[in-house]
Image (cartoon, rainbow, N blue to C red; front, side, top):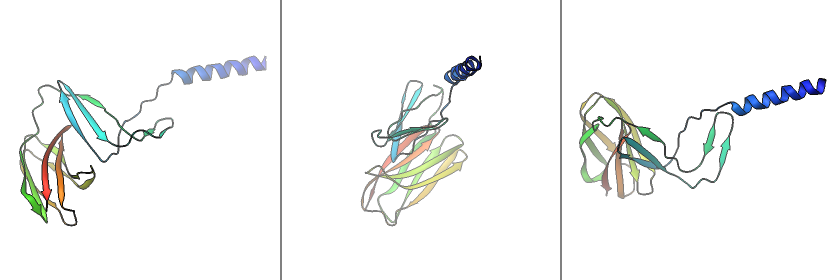
Length: 163
C-alpha cells in the first residue's frame, strides 16, 4: 500500500511538472545589429557567432548566437528622427551628430567600427527638438565607422570616416 501511495504521489508530481510553463525573457549581447520594418512588424537582428553552446536552468536560457525577436508596432507610428547628419566628415579628434527628435524619447548613440564593435556608446534622454551630440574620436584608428541611433525600436545610421 505504501508503494502505491508513493508511486501515485510521484506520478502526480511528474504530471504537474510537465504542465508547468516557463516564460523566458529574451535578450542578446552582441557586437552589432539592426532592424527593419515589414508592414506592422519590426524585425531586429544581432550579429554574433553561430550557436555553439546553450545552457538552460529553470528561468534562464543562455545561448551564444543569433536571435530575431519580433515586435508588432502601430502602422500610425511616426518616424522618431529626422534630418540626421554627421559632421565634419571625414573627422579628426571629434565629430558631431545632430538630428531632429520628433517625439520625447531615449536615444542610444553608438559608434560602430567595420568589425561590428561598438567603440563609443552613450544614451541621451530628451524632449522633442533639435539634438546635437559630440562624439570624441581620440584613440580610434583611421577608417570607416557608422554612427547608429536607436530610438523607439528603430535604427538610424550614417557613415563616418575617421582620418
